Amino acid sequence: MTITAQPTTIEEFLQLSETEPASELIHGHIIQKPMPQGEHSQLQIELCETINQITKPQKIAKAFPELRCIFGGFAIVPDIAVFRWERIPRLPSGRIANRFEIHPDWVIEILSPEQKYKQVLSKLLHCAEYGTELGWLVDSEDESILVVDGDRRVQELKNSDRLPVIAGVDLKITVQEVFSWLSF
Image (cartoon, one colour):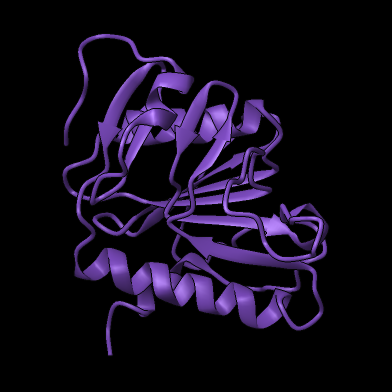
C-alpha cells in the first residue's frame, strides 16, 4: 500500500495516470488499494450479483465494483458502490457517464489483510458525511460487518443479525449468509 507524504489536491490527483490496483485520494494523501485476494473477490462478486439481481430489473439501483467516486475532496474506489437508478450519472444521450462526481447511496468495503481498519472506517464515515445513506465494512477475519448509517452511527453485526439495506431494496440477508459464500 503506497501512501504519499506530501499533500495532493484533487485536481493534481485526477491528472495522474491510473494505477493497478487503484489509488485513492483520502485527506490529501494518495493511497494505493491492496490487490484483492480470494475471499475479497468472492465476497465482492457475490454481493454485486445479489444486489443487482434484486435492484436492476426494476431500475431501483445498481451495484458497481471498483468504481471511482469523486466528492468532498476525496477520490475513492469503493469495493462496491451502489447508486439509486435515478442518480446514476448519464450523458445527454442517456449513456452512462465515465466520471461519477457524486457520493454513492450505499458503499460496501471488504477489509483486506493489508488494510487498516480505522482507515477504511474513516472512508465510510466520510461517505456518510457527504450523503451516503449506508456503509458496510465487511471483515471476513472475524466474520462481522460494521454498519455506518447516514448519521454516522456505527454498529457491529454478526451471525444471524439481519443487515440493513437502503430503502426500496428488498434484500433480506444476514451476516452469516454473506460469509457462507466463502465456502463452496
